[in-house]
Amino acid sequence: MDILDTFFNWTVFRDSFPLLLLGLTTTISLGVTSILIGLVSGLFVALVRMYAPTPFAALAVAYIDLFRAIPILVLLVLIYYALPFVGLRLSPFAAATSALSLVSCAYSAEIFRAGIQAVPSGQFEASKALGLRYWSMMTFVILPQAFRVVIPPITNNCINVMKDTALASVVAMPDLLKQATQAQALAANPTPLVGAALIYLLLLLPMVRIVGTLERRFAIGKR
Image (cartoon, rainbow, N blue to C red; front, side, top):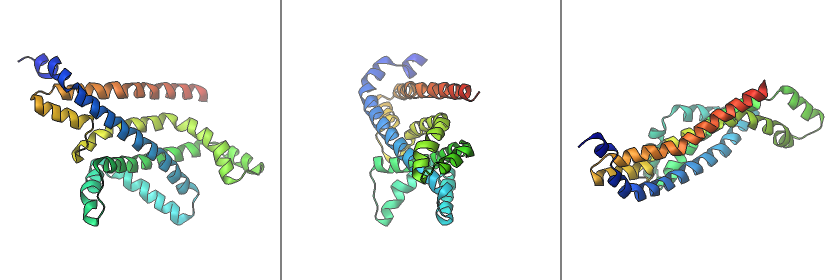
């Protein structure tokens, strides 16, 4: 058996493709859900860290430091296997979404904080001089400028979340990697894993190119 029959067997790939497609749907659902939750909660945590009273700001800092330091795989195992001992049992999808969202939130919070701090202080002073309330200032003046700054790193964080969905297979989540592993076992051939790698590449490569394009565009805008 040569390398083509072992890793690029068309018959095996064709037979396993429906299973891979089903796993891809689950992967996209998991990734998009985790990204949206992470972005919204990350913005909230960033605002709490920067503008809330000291006790709440300290809690936000502790949260960010903790979930940026803990490996996602460890967090996922703790959520799925340890929480049932305290009476909370989550489905594989809910456990994976929770783990990915918690970590994504921590990284997003730091990205948003950096973006807000990048807005010139004169913008804050001008908003206050116009009599804008805090939420009006943030909504109409500060955040639109901060979002422009954070789009490239936020997009890069979204790519990392999509890649980390592969870790959900450890909790029997039927994502793309899990389905590929099962197809490999059924066919006794690694071609489904190669197929899954190619699907990940086709899914993530456009996002990688978008990051590069955005970074160049905003760099030109700064100059």
